[in-house]
Image (cartoon, rainbow, N blue to C red; front, side, top):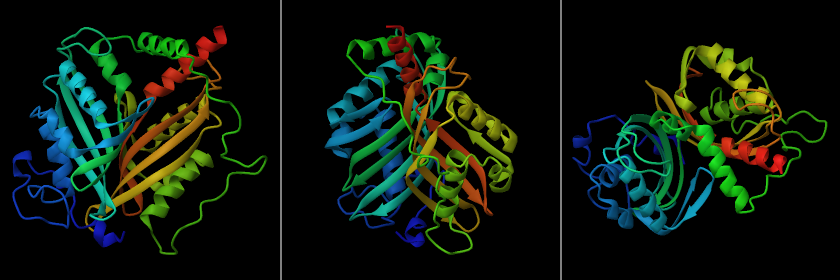
Length: 360
């Protein structure tokens, strides 16, 4: 993809009623003619399915054998998508999924990638997997990365801030996590193997990232190098150089981190619990604008061993491997804003499962 293709259309935060008003803005073979561009497509199918309650529209917009990568594993087939949607709407019938941003790349031949940042607002007035309705209002962030071709999504990576949702409902997260861990243990789920993460080779230090270009500033090189320098090299000093002083990070459990110091403290807390943690950037793409800077979508995987103290309790020895989805704003060579969701629910399950195995 060229930068120009990334710039064809940006998310412009227009009112939902203004979507679909206009002519096709990009080649989209096989997509319904009502959609003017890929941003229009992903925003409006989400609204139609979740808020207009046209759940059956999933049959028109998801491939029969689609794969959804979510908390704790993968699901296969659109019937699972239909079932999960029905169950969620039954628990939160007034769900509002406000499109906060859509970052995209692709074309009609290879398919379109979209990273859809959603602010969910709902009341728990129906039964959920966690129990009877509590009537409480819930607000959460979700990021859904989709790949679509000819009007159908065939792969999706989906995360929402699940522990935060459970707490807002009024339920005990630790109790629910333990119940889920006991169910996994009863099914014979083994603990993940423990050994070297692969962040280093024996006694050698982590390898440096090789830039893909020799340009003065390349946003992909900048983001990949920053992830590697912080997560794999432990170079927290780069935060002062690469993050704006007024940087704002919205992340898991409803946390908002203001400035470089709070971000550094949050990351040190994670590394204190998982000293061997390493991160691999699995996918990255962006939209750019000369005036507004870059909006970058990153999908990443963290692997680490719970051998230190912190908010997740005493060391359990659990090996965790979790997915993360992030949106970054980059302007004038610095990160200015971030939205990150990672699979904290799976992390908690793995720790609880390891504690149960240890007790046997």
